[in-house]
Amino acid sequence: MKVRVLVSLKPGVLDPQGRAVHHALEGLGFAGVQDVRIGRVIELDLADGTNDAEIDRMCRQLLANLVIEDYSFERIGNEERA
Image (cartoon, rainbow, N blue to C red; front, side, top):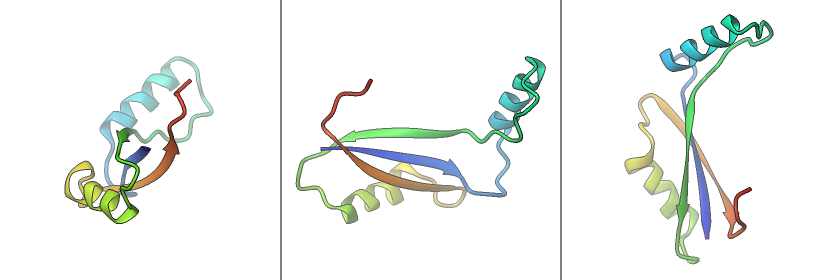
């Protein structure tokens, strides 16, 4: 079973990487970009019996820094990525 974990900075936390990308996009002429926030995607290949509580515990203990980050996860099955 595959699980995708999405980790992003909490609102109000400064995002210097996002700010740099925003500035670069403006420099390239993309005037319509309002804001940029950078996060990360973690894909896990887990045993079929892994329950949501166990996945949540993985996120809380290792995959996300709960002081400055939020996370969510979704089961994506066994399909191949495009």
